Length: 400
Image (tube, rainbow, N blue to C red; front, side, top):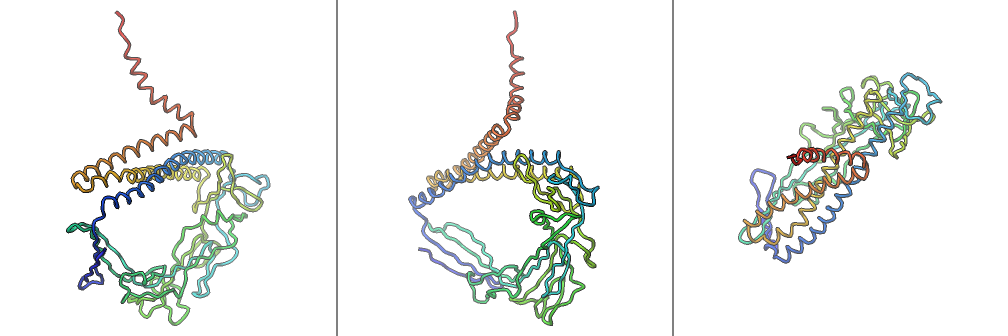
């Protein structure tokens, strides 16, 4: 049975709690290991799916991007909608435009933008835990140090879950909530954007509040925040502060500058820009918040696809490594009573997991190439066999 003990650190808002219990028996640890083995098996099998399907996704995306680049029609020389481009994949750059301003009447903020975001924070107590486990006098002990500090947080921290709530109570709710307003209609040149294109405009920038004043007597402006506090320099638990951000500046704004310039690749459908479905089955609906040529857009997409491919390859390898580790944990349990042997077994199992995971990852990727790109797989295999063939050709018997 666990026996908790507690001690306080003088001069700091923290305390330490230690629990101890008897070291679990062999059968108990063996049962825990069996559960881990099942989880490891599931991770191991799932890693094959991640690795194999990633190769197909990569090829599908590459084909779609190559198809898109070969078909895209530039519209930068046209200032009105051209019927001959109906249904085609088009490329254009232009300034964002919205028909109505987004505003927050509570704070007097009003701007023409694709998105207006209010981020509210409350000054609250936050609990941190630092845990370490060790063995002493034949018992297994866990020492947890709890420390407390006050911080600005955008979500409500539930102090009821603290190890020591007394003296660290937080309000149960915030008087001001965060929110994001989105323009119902966004246009570039004569075209209105689909929801998918609008959703890509997420580069938020801070609104400087130097020209604003608090809407009420109990709200003041300082450091680009609206503070609801008696003294923003020395806030108390429960005080509030609010900041505003925008994404996709559009229309005329006297204090934020010119509208944002974007580059879009999508399908022309009447006066709308919508997703384009390629022959490979992928969707092309691209937007960058800068001016780019069609070639530059597709180069960026190819680069992003490469990064995603290698990230998923590493992720698949990591899933396989963890799965193998969990499945072989039983060998660690069998020798757990012998520290020196246990450490050697741990090292050997880790090396084994790395080697097996690496080998199986490469074989799975190769199988993906053989399934999705057989010609390339055969070509690479032929190139790999070429040195062996050359070496064999040099090893002919000499004529007497």
